[in-house]
Image (tube, rainbow, N blue to C red; front, side, top):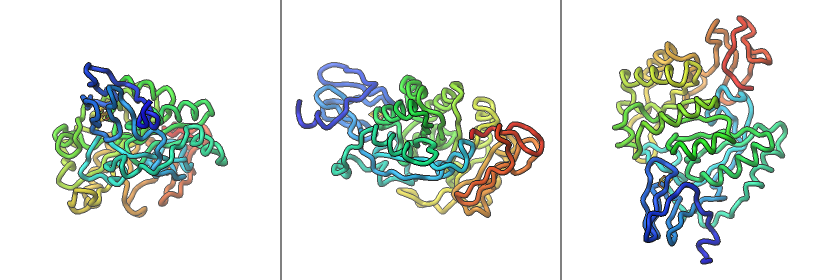
Length: 343
Ligand code: SF4
């Protein structure tokens, strides 16, 4: 076995197409790779007719974060979670807020030592009252094999696994992962396929399919949209998106409307607060739980109110969270309606 193969993990979900060529079937890009070529994610490579992952065990960032930071607002509110990420991404967002790891590839991370899945899980278990593990920071699907190995172990140890993702994955691998995961936050970039083509290098339909699949499996799902002024803040399109979420994912889907700041290749001015408020009001008419993110606590409206009587049931200030208005079974203490929060 050559040195390359010793240090790499063979990928799942690919097909040999002859003469050393192959196609990767992990995500909807379906990269066709000749010997020596890398996929669009920059993390998978064809070596002598076999597909290998280059980021298996390569952690570029690992922290204990408040779960609200992911963001998850209705999944174990007030808890903290072991969070980790690697390098690579199957999207190339011009406004990426984590471009140092998502758009930077293996060469920059050659010196990172491998961490075994067992070590990650034991780190999570060592914490007092551990919630679980969050796959986040860069796009987790591009280290699918590592995430799956950790998720299986973590699941067996009764931990929760959460995934913060762009949703760009094929259904077969997604279904495999869903067996060992509990909650997803999907970053819906826009409800316009042209936006996906021009600003992200992807497409909308597979992301919708991912969200429907997660929802149909009964997993916890929150959705985030980063609103960029003049680019994806069209109210007609936003209204179409809300209608789709409400009909296909349900009114209890938690929606985070996030403020954009200039990042990576995009230099537009930050989203005006007035725009966020208009979209927040629109969303609140269609969905039960809507928040504004990336703004100061005073501007966020980040508390959770009972959808039935409007009583505040979860209070948030920065990352301090107090579940004040729910009983132990998740019912509003004031009106006894059930609020869609897992805790
Ligand atoms: S995971 Fe990477 S290599 Fe595979 S299809 Fe997607 S972008 Fe291409």
